[in-house]
Length: 450
Image (cartoon, rainbow, N blue to C red; front, side, top):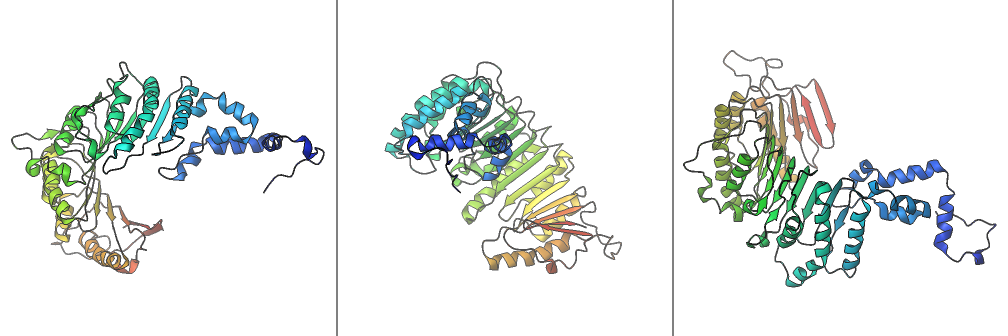
């Protein structure tokens, strides 16, 4: 709804319509101005906008009124969380680069969280697009100037040569603030032998690498506690585990045959098991709709599990196409003498017999997560029906059933079952064997407490 112009001011005297709007806004009560201002800069509000959606920032702030423009321009703390989205073949790319450089300059000496989403996606790198990337070289140099103030740095959709320019132009040569680092490369750039990404003595707590070769990356691994890798070879993954003795959480994604083929037979012949004393949380995603990819991923997962000792592992999750190497996992648990309390599996990765085998061995499990991945309504209901068999396997409990002395109580310490059913509602009538004390249904997720 538009704001009417004050009656006492004749229209001919208003030379600039925008000035009138700003003046009217300036006369709003301070409480209302403060509320709207907080909406623009509140990170908790921006967090609900979804992945890849730029948050509200100081640029629309300055467009509201002259007072806000002055506040925004003179407040460095409003400029310390820049998000740059680089669009290919943009006619205003050069101007946007200059604006981004000015943005970094307005942040003063405050800590920074920088997110850069480049124009590149997996696929052939077009020559004209490679040429367009040179426009962003000044921005890369400007980022180098403020790397020592970065708490968080996410670099995605950039060529490896541009990544190397950001890191190697002025690598960290002293202790820095960097706590979270994410680098997402382009597959077609992996053949570039000159692209070395050097962050010197930076010692982040959290690191994400996608489509990357570890021999092109320099960092201080001593403080790393969380590592996420996609398309990283198994050998490189073991190198990370060796270099990062404090690692607590590992998320390993295996998607591509191109990476798998770098590892002959997916084994580390002649090596001893690697002991990771602090690793507590392990998640492996090797799920693929392609049968060939699934067949190639299974020996990789087996080799990974066979070559580890994880004495403090308590949380294990897997997304895997059948068959999941259950015996290799149980060997890991036995070899490590660890206590698994949370177990997460996806539909189809394990048979009922293997699930019984896990239940007989993992008596300490208190929480079980089961994820359905339906692609259509027919397969969804088929998965629901299969869920009944799984529940019959591990929900036997002498609290609710009359069992003979020869029957094993599977998962005797089980307290919570979480079933993620996607877009399909979870039909309780398919769960006749499970007697519930509590049942909670929210966001298409069923939470059961036997």
